[in-house]
Length: 286
Ligand code: SF4
Ligand code: SF4
Image (cartoon, rainbow, N blue to C red; front, side, top):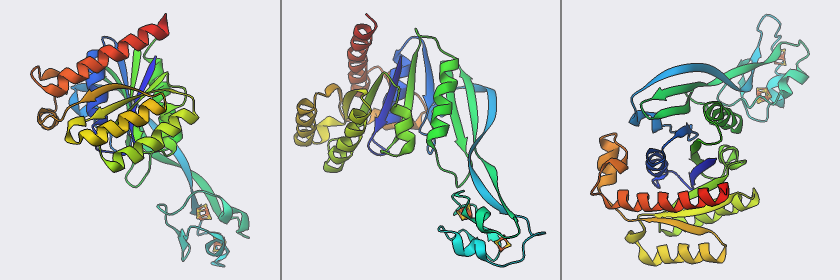
C-alpha cells in the first residue's frame, strides 16, 4: 500500500506529518519525493547502501572543431540558450532544434546527470531519496524512479509512505498516480484553501482516494470550517485536524519526529489521525 502525503505549497507541515505517520506505522519504507527540498533523511541516522546517477534530461553541446560560427543555432533556439557559440546549460531545454539546423553537425544532445539517487538504510527502515544537482529541477521521471526504488524494498504487507512534492506540477502528478491513497495537508488560510482546491482537483482527476488533514486548524477556526465544508461537498474525508503546537518547531530544531514528544498536542492529534488512516487501510485490505 502506498500513501502519498502532499500539499498545495511548501511549509504546510507535510514532511512533519509524513514523518510522524511513518514513525507510527510498524513496517514502513519511506520515499522522499520532495526532491527540491529533501529533508526526511536528516531526522535519521543512516547509511547509504546504494547510490546511482540519475539522468533526467538532455543538453546541447557544441563541438568547436566543426563550428563555423554561422549562428543558425542561436537564431533557432527559443530559449535563448546559445550565445556566441556557447550553450548555457541552465537555459537549454534539450529540445534538439539546434542539432537540426546546424549545417556542420557540430551540435549534439548529451544526457545530463540531474541527481544522485540513494537508498539509505536507517535505524527506522529504508528511505528512497535523491540529491539534486545545483540548478536542476525535480522531474516526473525522477519521482517515478524513487517510488520504484522504494517498492524494491517492500512487499505488499509493508506500507510505503511518500513525502510528495508541493504544488501541482509534474513531480506531484508522478507522486500521486498509482498511489493507493493521498493525504493532502492544508492550512486554514485563504491561500491554503485555494491551493487545496487545486491539488484536490488534481487527485480527483487521477481518481486517487483522497483524504484531507487541516494542520494548525485552530489558528483560524472560520477558515478551517470553510475547508471542512468544501471537503464535505466534494466527498473528501477530513481524516485529521492538528492544532497549532510550538513543539513542532522544537522537534524540527532538535531533528526528532514529533511523535516522540509525548505531551505535545500535535503528536496526540497525529496519532488519532493515524488510527483513522489505519481503519481505512484495513477496510481496503478486507
Ligand atoms: S549552427 Fe552549428 S556551425 Fe553554426 S554556430 Fe551553431 S554550432 Fe556552429
Ligand atoms: S537543445 Fe533546444 S534549448 Fe537547447 S540550445 Fe538547442 S535549441 Fe536551445
